[in-house]
Length: 95
Image (tube, rainbow, N blue to C red):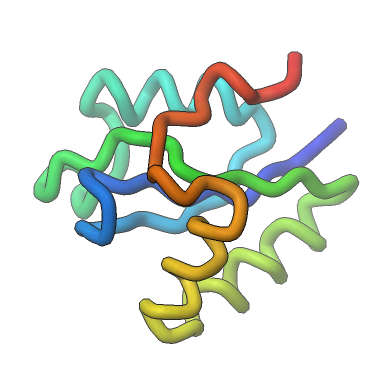
């Protein structure tokens, strides 16, 4: 079973949220429906701009904690390396 680290944004260079999920597609649907965390609800953070796939939950949680500690500019660089336009990449989630 795959596990994911993902980053949501409300607009390019705007508010972001870093999370983990086993069922990424389902989790993103929850966020888009406004059923995410308090932070995502407060700042209307619903656009999936980045995700990474991991083999285990331990790997995904480790990566999430690492990324959360990063400076904001490093997070922006991570996103822009694969998604320079900050487009919604929900359609790219593997089945």
